[in-house]
Amino acid sequence: MNPLKPLAPAPVVDGAIPVDAGIGLRSPHMQALLQTRPAVGWLEVHAENFFGNAGVPLHYLMRAREYYPVSLHGVGLSLGSTDPLSQPHLRQLRQLIDRVQPGLVSEHLSWGAVSGIHFNDLLPLPYTEEALDHFCRRVDQAQHVLGRQLLIENPSSYLRYRHSTIPEWEFLTTVAERTGAGILLDINNIFVSAFNHGFDAETYLRAIPADRVGEIHLAGHSLKQFEDGELLIDDHASPVCDQVWSLYCCALRLLDPKPTLIEWDAELPPLPDLVDQARLARDCLNRAATRRQETCR
Image 1: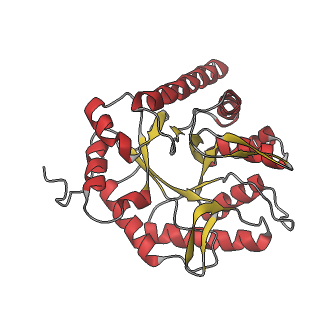
Image 2: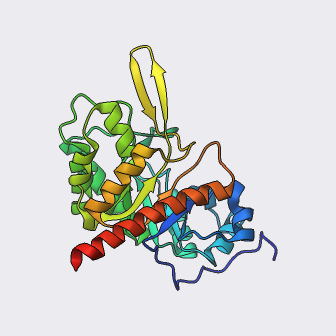
Image 3: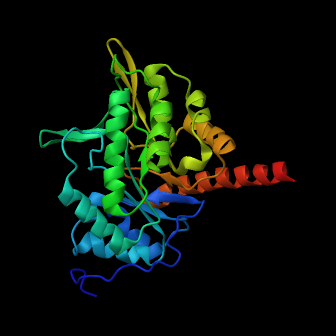
C-alpha cells in the first residue's frame, strides 16, 4: 500500500477504550508495534501529530487502529488562553476524530498561547471564579465543534498564582460538572504538584468523583535541585516510580479501575520496556478488580 494514499475511516467496531493498560504511541515505536503487536489494551497518540488527511504518520496510525483501540490526546488547543479558540485547529481535530473514531478525546487544564504566540509548555491557570467561568465556556465551545465529550487532564505545576482561591481538584471537578466533560486523572501530575506545592495527594484523589474519571495517566518524573529548594519535574523520561505506583493503587481503591495509560515522551526506551510498564499497570488493575468483586460478595 502506498503510505501517502488517502485512507478510509477506521472501523468503529471495538473502538471503545477498555479498562486495561495502554501505552502512548510515539513515532519511533510505530514500526515495531505493527511488527510485534504487543499485548497492550489500547494506544494513545498526540492528536496534532496526525493533522492532515494523508501522510506516513497517519498511515501508520490507521494501521495500528486495525489492531488496537485509539485515544486522541490534544496538547495544542490552549483551552485556558484568552485568545479565541483556533477554528482551524478545531476543524483539523474534528477531521481526525471522524477518521480515527477514537474511544476517548482529551485535552489539558492549561493554556499555551497568548496574542498568537504559542509556547512549548502547558502553563497553569489562576484558579479563580473568573477563570473557571472562562474555561467552562471554552470547553463548551470545543465540545460543540468536535461533537464529542472531552476529558480534561489535571496539570503538573511548578508555581501558583497568589490570588488563586479554588483548590485545583475543586476547579477541575466543577469544570466537569458544568460542561459534561470527563476527567483524565494524571497520577504522576498529582504527585509532582503535591510535592512542589505542599498539599496532600490523597486529599486530591478523595475529592474527585469516580463517575467523571474516564482515563488515568502514569509517567515518570525527575528531581531538580535549585539554590532555594527542590522541584519535581514531570518529564515523562523514566519509569513510573514506586511512590506513584502506590498513589495509583490508592486511586484505584477510591475511584475503581479505569483505563490507564503509560506515558513516555523523552529518552524513549525500547518498546518492550514500555510494554513492561503497561503490564505492571494491568497487574494493579487486576488486583483492584479482584478486591472490588470480593467486597461486593
